[in-house]
Length: 151
Image (cartoon, rainbow, N blue to C red; front, top):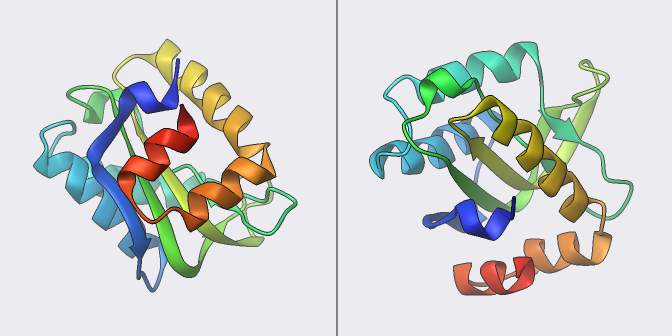
């Protein structure tokens, strides 16, 4: 599974000025909802999941990322949203839930098959392991640039 094949052009937000993780999730999830990819309750379900099973991922470099997602029952059709953030926004660590992770990149998964969720998480993890790609994504100035980096 390739990220760029599921990334929705209209759900790529460059330089999102968000005060917290909830605003990031509401903004990205709202885009996916308005485009018809997810159900009406997708955003609330994602926020609830994030509160219990956080998705902040320390990457060991200059930037960190978060991968908010929720069960397939909230998804109409598979899609991804991506936001680069104007400044660090705190998500909690997916492994150590009480540890804060300042994030500048958020990739939201909305997948309609359980198997595809695992495969896409592996694809996203592979991209996030490359600090050069992460750095390029965070500094991208257009959605076209994001797609080019992910190609």
